[in-house]
Length: 80
Image 1 (cartoon, helix red, strand yellow):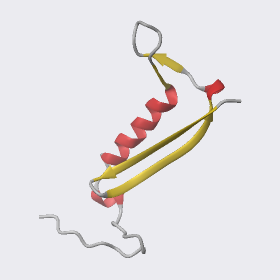
Image 2 (cartoon, rainbow, N blue to C red):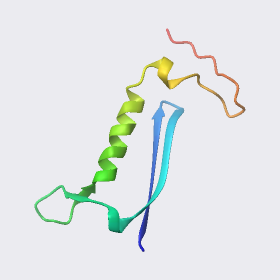
Image 3 (tube, one colour):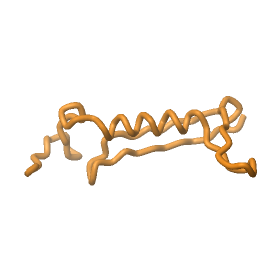
Image 4 (cartoon, one colour):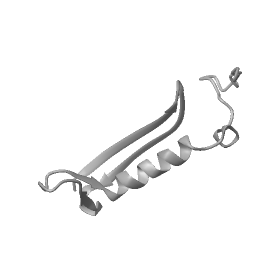
């Protein structure tokens, strides 16, 4: 079994909004060609992961939640 690890981190400036870390068996991926030469492709999982990342980035500040520092304390930011 050949496994592929995918890690995607979504940042809003210095603030990490989301981290997606998963292992997937390559036998189950659907490859979609991106060029005529047949050597370049993307997968269905890659497309869905990018759509989820776009959804997180397009969320409102309320949906993103409070900005917490490493100790769990809320960070006060000045949005002028």
